[in-house]
Amino acid sequence: MNTSNQKIFIHCPRCGEATLEPATKKSLTCTACQFVFYLNCAAATVALILNEKNQLLVTRRRKDPFKGTLDLPGGFAEPGETIEQSLIREIKEELDLEITHLEYLCSAPNTYPYKSVVYPVTDMAFVCKVKTFATIKARDDIDDFYFVDLAELDTQLFGLSSPKKIIQHYLKVLSQNQPPVFP
Image 1: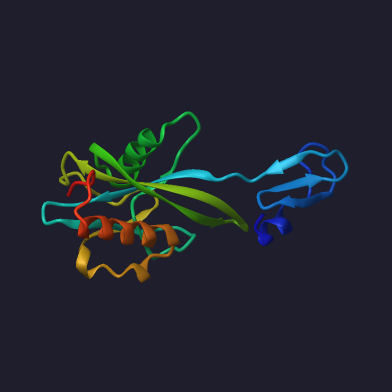
Image 2: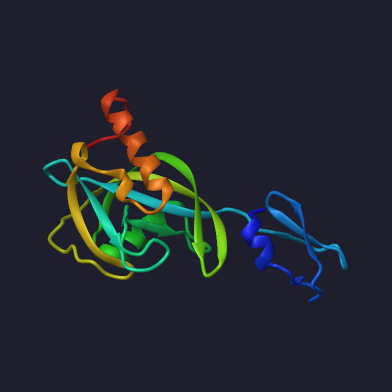
């Protein structure tokens, strides 16, 4: 369990006593009632969307964590959604784009610090095609968006770690002409 989370989660959600103690990397146990509290990974999606010039769509974060840094569009899966449904919903909410095709690329571990809690996340990345860019606009938690040549993309401008890893993996796949990724 992340050390910073040990300071946040003190009271047992079952009995209310201030007796939660670290048990494993991802759990705390209540010494009063033996309840085990798990902080499992959240599922999140990431879209790699290219325009007709083969430029990657990147966004600028409107909110913390990492407000003002670059990001790839996507977001957290909601209860009852598949990962694919989540990605389609997030891209519509954030950019008003309609995904017409998506193909799994890779996954990457991430952490998401939010209001003093550090959440473990598994980001699942997809290469996506959209119906049209005519409707694109920054909405929801997106401050702005850009299309960037892959060769000129500076991954150090991204706040979260997983987009950096995903972009590096994508560039490697492209350099090796490995299927099933399509531009």
